[in-house]
Structures are given as structure tokens and as C-alpha cells.
Length: 506
Ligand SMILES: *[C@@H]1O[C@H](CO)[C@@H](O)[C@H](O)[C@H]1NC(C)=O
Ligand SMILES: *[C@@H]1O[C@H](CO)[C@@H](O)[C@H](O)[C@H]1NC(C)=O
Ligand SMILES: *[C@@H]1O[C@H](CO)[C@@H](O)[C@H](O)[C@H]1NC(C)=O
Ligand SMILES: *[C@@H]1O[C@H](CO)[C@@H](O)[C@H](O)[C@H]1NC(C)=O
Ligand SMILES: *[C@@H]1O[C@H](CO)[C@@H](O)[C@H](O)[C@H]1NC(C)=O
Figure 1: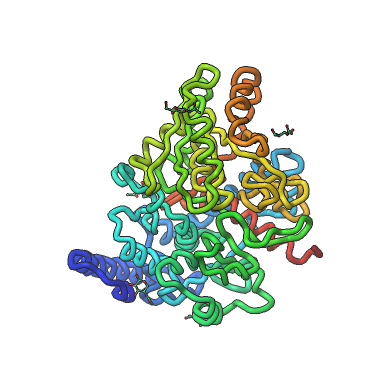
Figure 2: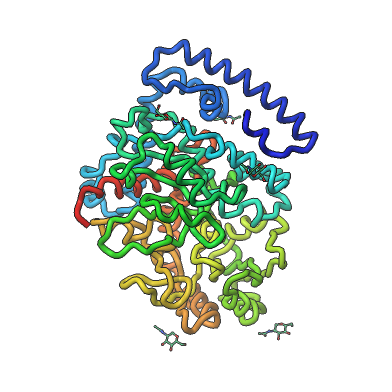
């Protein structure tokens, strides 16, 4: 709490924060008391601010911290088996998956999480900083976990879910994790996790290359030439408006596209994360249950986007021109609406509800290959429709532009991203409709019409495969963190794969 004072507060916020400080002191004293009552299983020697960093979200969770070995044994079953479940999703063929599991057993995997970063480099700092900076009543994606119902009405969608929240969400999840795969002894660690939300921090404080080198890296006790490639960093994006230095770190989780395309046959630590959706309907426990079958979807197509993006918005404006008047495809109604210039959604909840009611959802290029929309759409069980081009990556297509980043460098957990295991990873063609990019938007409606009229079985297969895999795009938040087959356990599977393969020649 101490350094939160750095941030300028309004008067009401000051009163509130004084109250929060008192509350936190009480809880921290209680935790210190509890801590002194247990026999120290490992010397974590946490001082006051670090006890705060590991505050459990509610009472039932604090039990699992206290009871020690029995709950830890239960936890081993959760995260390690979540990772095994991910492996089986990424390798659908059972005997190959068994072979993989025999070589890459998640149960023996151990990671160390730095719990003494200086305060400015913690997720708590960036979360309060974002709050102070954005002055939104609704900053629930910035460290406050699942966004409640009330917050969703009239939310300025693109502002609340700014792309930079991904590294903060991951930093928080790893800092809070108390389960058995976390080791407190660096000797046992296969991996070192640095829970630093680099782009959230950059967004608030314009951190420089030197800040990160001297105030973060130089102070990591176990970071050296030998362990560098086993240090995991988070950076929501490595782009022009970001701290580009993060892109030079060998093991980095970022939203796509990757900064450097990994050459085929190389072991690369550039890991693509899905965009974060913190809405309750998209949590790993319920995301599949919320899906509707093909026959329960009333729209053939739902398209909601604006054409006023800073980058190349041609396909979107072409779409509105060419397809904008279409009212039905193969007898099913179509819903097309252009969002306003400010790129805000009047009601995010109803937009997502429309996606859950649609068979097809076009995802046309924006500034970068992936976009939040793609993940919202997939997790709503709506089949994405993309324009397809050759890429500069032999054997892979681009869904962005001709000779641009391939799907392997743009999408999370894609086939071709697991060194030595070409059969591992998601094949996005199994659950996306790709439309001839040269022909462009005018080919969209005929392609969809043909599928609806003549290839129902193909559509059902696509929907079923999509339903199976969507968990890997979902972030378990709060008490759901790091125990389900979800985006975070999938990231861990890919990170472990990279680390396991380090010794091998590439
Ligand atoms: C970081 O940004 C926040 C919000 O603008 C500001 O209150 C704080 O003083 C800044 N911290 C530093 C170290 O510059
Ligand atoms: C507390 O955590 C438990 C699971 O650990 C969950 O079922 C419950 O809903 C949580 N309560 C609150 C208020 O978040
Ligand atoms: C963090 O802890 C390690 C191990 O106890 C110590 O060597 C290091 O100096 C600490 N770093 C900071 C920034 O306090
Ligand atoms: C769509 O409808 C508008 C308004 O009726 C009309 O001006 C426009 O020409 C139509 N576009 C196409 C491609 O038919
Ligand atoms: C894609 O569309 C272009 C232009 O309409 C056409 O020339 C080309 O043959 C099409 N490619 C395929 C594979 O159908």
C-alpha cells in the first residue's frame, strides 16, 4: 500500500484508500500471525508488502494456504492435470499424446515466482496506476478480476479491455498461485517466472529500456547468462507503442503477432497469448456450457465493427459497402452494424450475446493480425470468417494480408509452434472459414451460403472442434486461476515445452 501514495488521488479516493490501508494492515497482521503459527516448510521470509502481494481473495482460499500439505496434494492434481488435459487437446491422437506425456510429464514441473520485485514493478502498482490514470469507473480488467454484471452495461468496450491488460492478468495469477508446482527453492526450478506487467507499466509510466535493465533485470537474484532462457516474462504486446526492449528477452508471452517469427525447426520462446476476456460467461468452467448448437443460433452472420481503425481498414469498409445491405444468407437473418468513430460498444453484453446467436462472425483485419474480436467470437461458439492469403512462412497461411505474418506467428498455441512435435498445436483451419483473400469480401457471402446450403456436416464438425478447444482461450480468474485447462495452463504447457527442449540441438 505504501507506494500507492505515489499516485495522485482525488479526495474521495484518498478517504477510500485510507480505509483500504487500514483493512490491509489488519489482514496482513492476521496473515503474519497465521504464518508464525505454521512450521516453515520453506523460507519465504516475506516482509509486509509481500504478504499483501499474496493476499487470498476470500476466506475459503486462505484455508488452502494454511492447511499445508493436504491441500497442496489436492492442488497437484489440479494444475498438473489441467496441463495434461491441454496436451490432449493440442494432440488429439491419443497414442501420440501418451507418448508426449511420457516425455513431458507436467507433475514434475516446478516454477519459481519472484515475490520480491520492487513495488513499481508489481502488478499491484500498475493496477492502481491504471485506475488513477484512466479515471474510468470501470477498470475491472485491470487487476480486479472477473467483471461483474453491472460493469458490463454501457461499457466503453475497447477502453476497458485495452490490449495491455494481458501481462497484468498473468502477473497477478502467477503471484497469487500457491500450489505445488510453485517452488520456493531456485535449485528446484525448471522455470523462473517474473510477474512484471511490462506493458501496463509502460502505459502508465513510459518505462525505458534502461529502467527495465537496471531496475528489474539487474535485481533478479537468479537471472544470469545461463538462466536467461528459463526466465519467463510477460508483455501484452511488442509493438511501436510499447516497451520494445521486452521483445529482446528470449522467453516472452505476448499477444500476437510475435516480434520475431520463429524459423521452422527452431525452438523459440516467443509465446502467443489469447486476449483476455474477464466476463463471467467466458470463464473456463462455464464457457462450453454457454454454447448453443447450430440449430439454436438464429443469425447466419453477425458482424459488428467499425471501419475507423488507424491501420489498414480497407477490408472492413469494403465489407460494409459490399455486404452492408445483405439481410439474409440461405434464409437465415444477418446482423451487420458499424460501430461509431469512438470505437465504443453501447452495450458489450448484448454484442457478445449476438455472437452467441450467430453461426458465422467475420473477423477482418485491423491494425494487427489477431484482435480481441476473434477470441470473443470463438468463445461464443461462432465460427470466425477470415480472408486467407499466402504468408512469408512456408507451409502456413496468413489471415491478415498477403505475405504477412502467418497464423503460426499470430495465433496462440498454433500448429508449428512446438519444437520437434509438428503434430502438436491447434489447426485453426479446423474451426474457421477461410475465404479467398484475392477475391476478398465479395467472396464472403457466396462461401457462407454454400456452406449453409450444401455442407451442414462440415459446419457441425467445425462447431464441435471449436467447442472442444475454446477453453484454451479462456482465462480462469480469481479462485479459478491456475487450476483449469485454460489459457494460462496452455501457456505453461508451451513454456514447459520450450524449456524442456532447450538442451536439444535446434
Ligand atoms: C506513474 O504513473 C502514475 C499515473 O500517471 C503516476 O501517478 C506516478 O507518479 C508515475 N510513477 C512514476 C515513478 O513516474
Ligand atoms: C471464494 O472462493 C470459493 C472457491 O475457493 C468460491 O466458491 C466462492 O464463490 C468465493 N467467494 C467469493 C465471494 O468470491
Ligand atoms: C530478492 O530475494 C533474493 C533472495 O532472497 C535476494 O538475493 C534479492 O536481493 C532480493 N531482491 C530484492 C530486489 O530485494
Ligand atoms: C445499400 O443501401 C443503400 C441505401 O438504401 C444504397 O444507397 C446503396 O446503394 C446500397 N448498396 C448496395 C451495394 O446495394
Ligand atoms: C481466388 O480469387 C481470385 C480472384 O477472384 C481467382 O483468380 C483465384 O483463382 C481464386 N483462387 C482460388 C484458389 O480459388
